Image (cartoon, rainbow, N blue to C red; front, top):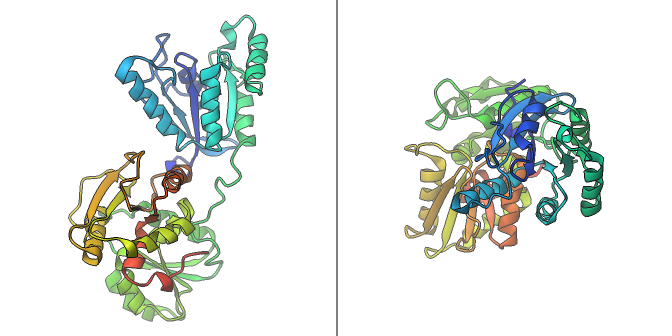
Length: 396
């Protein structure tokens, strides 16, 4: 059950002031001592997360954050910055309140602007002589009554789980990787070049997730490496309904596929699954307007040592410079590193984001949209650069 990738889990983050009991509460909710608890304010200096299954919620990721009132100089500001970063990937927020004061209301506005459901909580009920009175005060200040909880005595936890269930975003878990492209009984061929990108003995996450969904749909799934594509096609009684390949070998697979077979790539499927496919398609067209004076940002979700034929660090830059010119400036960021100010860029090209949850990818897209910067993803960009974007399956 814990094999569910964190990127597919419901992200439930705890926010509040220092020493408001966030760490105690996350320990109580998960039933494990995953966060250090101390009476000293500011004990949590980095976000702490725990993946677990919660009935009837399913796969969740609980995240403890540093207090948003940390004012201890430069380090305190850095801790608050990390808390702000967690907001970008939060599906549901548990806001631990003390009085519903200005700072708590400010963070509620921040979360509301991101359309993140907020559950107000008054923790440490065991230490409060008038918890009901404090809850009424918070309700008056915030317009919503908090749940009264004691992490120490494990009271009120069922109310929190119930509230989480009631506030799950409507679009959470509703996405499908392959959408309506295939159904039960359809033959799907996966062309998967096992190059340096895929560690020996393992498949990369998008391949695994796609195979799992196709099996759940009761499709007939076959797979091969690029060099075995002709032999695989010859062995089939009928052409596959759909061929899914690695975007890097789009031209090779397109040249060999049966005319009646649809073609797409794992990255293109994830462009829709994790992001905004329409914005990515519009962003890809911006490649045609780039010049050698343009600047492109390539964003990877994974953090890894550069590989000799790395798609983001080597192949895409090479293809772009071949099309645009050798002096095209290309910057590369990875993991959670993503500039707040994108104004210097003429285009952003994002990876398939299999390691990020949809909320986080959409927050990056919203950031680009707000600054009027075109954005696309690896698969869509590679299809454009291969001149076959209009020949592959995009919307499903």
